Image (cartoon, rainbow, N blue to C red; front, side, top):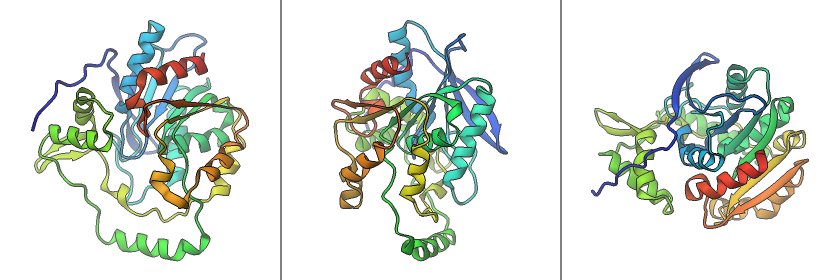
Length: 303
């Protein structure tokens, strides 16, 4: 299998392990605190890692001519953060984020960005703790289709059945194979960036290379997604909010008719102070596809 020379970060991160709510969390840090400038906190999506934001961090530093303080974290059970139990509950992510901000910026509001799953989490968090956020950025965190309460018994039954057989993740023969998987998932991802990400996405084991993710993330979530509850949080967001999506429409591709664009637009309309941006030639992984264009939008919004 062919290999590519890995991308070389222009501004490498520093690693830190923080114990948050009894679990060791991997935190990546760039730059240093600057008087009057809040930290920018980046939260990744499902089956991703904090290192995924490296390309945007490099572009931000290039545009500004210096490094601002930027902090990213691997969610519990992803990357080099400790795994949780056999089930991952959405409220735990909010509590982990709350503990992270207590540790890294206890006295000053932060600029908070989330991608995909991370975008959904930061939107809820910003409505629950509006005083902690100065600016909010959501990258393609669309949320989920509203669940019918009648689905609860079967959902719970499926979850109970799955717990009897622990989930697994397939091994890869090499990091090059991991990089190929990343490029298959996202054909826009350049080979050098895929080669660099592969080392952060997977680790070597006796059986080969395994993804840095707890297989329990594959279990069915026993808690139904309730649109009304999510929007009750979105309506309380006080921070100016930037919504960013790729030009390659993903919503219908993911959900078909179960979650329409009209439904999402009605949700987004409830966010009190909203700016919107569409990045050309970008899909769901827009921080990989167009890191420079995204960095420009962030600088214009964050100031």
